[in-house]
Image (cartoon, helix red, strand yellow):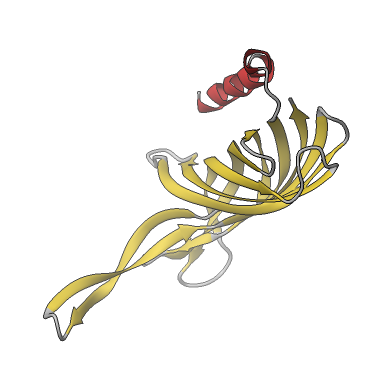
Length: 212
């Protein structure tokens, strides 16, 4: 359902927005690439870590230039990968489920050349949400806060068509694990000390850009 809504929004941008607004500066890019995933440490008698395997990722971005060098965009990124549990006793990891990951990110993009330049390096940063959905019975999906940093190059073949090469890093916050209690000897107070846990991913993609 979420994927269908995304494609409806992109279709509206492509077909309606340019004529309705009579403005230039819209860019829509479907992309595909490879994703490197991280893992999570566990504290159980049986398993001590979950590792999400690397795999294919794909998605789309739809953006609008708000200045000569700057723009905003929405990005959807999908990845499906096996997840292995590492036994505390050692040995090979065991597959426990396949993990479907969908990221929904709002980005701010800064270009180093203007829109009419053929070669346009850029950097991006932003935030959004990641939905993690295991394909295992009685294991429910969760949605967590995520942020993104990335960079790449846009190459324009013409006023309306180009290619986009990009690399991004987008960690997802999972939870905060309690490490113990810390006490201040001067203020006579004690607090739980926590360690934030993140699921990290890095990917590289290539996409065809339609410019309006």
